[in-house]
Structures are given as structure tokens and as C-alpha cells.
Amino acid sequence: MDNRPIGIFDSGIGGVTILQHLIAKLPNEEYIYYSDSKHNPYGEKTKEEVIHFVDGIIHYFIAKDCKAIVFACNTATALAIDEMRKKYPNLLLIGTEPAYKMIHDYAPNSKTIVMATPATIESERFQKLYHHYDNQKSYLLACPNLAHLIEEGEEEKLTSYLQNLLGPFQKENIESVVLGCTHYPLISKKIETVLRKVKFYDGGEGIANHLFHLLETNHQLNLNKAKKEVYFEDSSYNKQKKERFFTLLTELQK
Image (cartoon, rainbow, N blue to C red; front, side, top):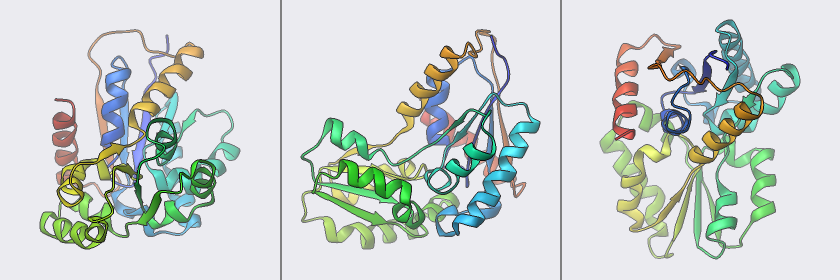
């Protein structure tokens, strides 16, 4: 048994959509969530900047003696995880990337939109994934600033943004949408309002299953069923951010 905590981070609070799956699959674990809202959004930063931010967060988790670190951010995974695995070969680092393979597995003939940050869409890591599973019916849609609007809860601006972004696809009979940023599941209903009935795909459940398997294989599961805590840290020391994070986590777990 290993009662050390699991670290999980995002450029803001969007990674709560991954955390909900981790808690459901691994309810006996203790979690430390790090929100780097000081540098949000990562999707408009350079690769070098993101690597620098992520390296600092990993140092924070090392100091907390975390047994695993989950990159609950597609952009951080796309731009930094390979570098971090080279630098910290003994750490268990779990990445998040757009769940485009799920289209190949479950809806190979569906008309699909892949929504992600510009940095994720343009990254070599995602481009390899996309071209390997390309169903020839997919649109890659970079969504600059969308994660920031979600992070700040800009409801009116979000509605207008999505109408302008997705409106041109209303006549395309889109069937599937890959949510390639952990913030995006928080606005799935708003997306559906524009595109009508679509099937959403994201990697949250798969990440939880993968982490469970790795911890079980390494005999690192925490088998103590006493009530565990989720700790929250924000790089901007934003009290309102913390309150919104726990409100969202509660809503997602219903």
C-alpha cells in the first residue's frame, strides 16, 4: 500500500473534469490539485514557456512527495511531457491528449470536429496522433482564448464566441466532437446548443483507468478506505478560483 498523494495540474481549473474520473476510479487516494492560473492560458504560450511552467509545478509535487503526477492539460502534455519524462525518468507522469483515437475505435465514419487550443493542434505530438487515425471526415478547430473564457466564467462572451466559431458547421451534420482541452467538457451543453445533438469524446475515463492499472501493477494503490482529501493550490492565490473549483467538482460528481 502507498498512501502518498497523487498530483494533478492544469493551467487553471479545467482539470477538474479529469479529477472527477480519478476520484471515481481511485476513491481511496489523496489528491493535490495545482491550478496555474497565473499563467493561464497555456494554449497561447510558447513551448519553452510551457516547459518552464510545468517544470516548476513538478518541483512543487516532488516536494509534496507525490507518487504520480497527472498532466490534466492537453497543451502541457503536447509541449512538455516528453521533456519532463527525460528530465525525471523515475517519476510516474500521466499525460492527457485529445481523444481522437476514440473516434477510430467507436465512430470511425462520423463527421467530427476536434476542438483544442492552437498549441495543441499545432503540436508534433497531436499531429502524429491525428494523421495515424485520420478518418478523412474530421475538422481540426483551433479555439484561441476559449479556455480563458471558460476559466473566467464569461457566460455572454462564451455564447457569442461559440456561435461565431461553430455556427459555420451547423449545416455539416457534425456527429462527433472531440473535446481536446480539459476546460471544454464544462461547456458541452453550450456547444450542443450550437451544433445540436452530437456525441462528445474526452480522455478523462481512459486516464483514470490507465493510472489505476499502473498503480495496481506497481503495488502503489492506497487501500486505506478512510475519507480522503482533495487539496487545492492556485499560483495566483485566488480564493474565488478555489471556491469555483470545489463547486464544479461537487456538480460533476452528482
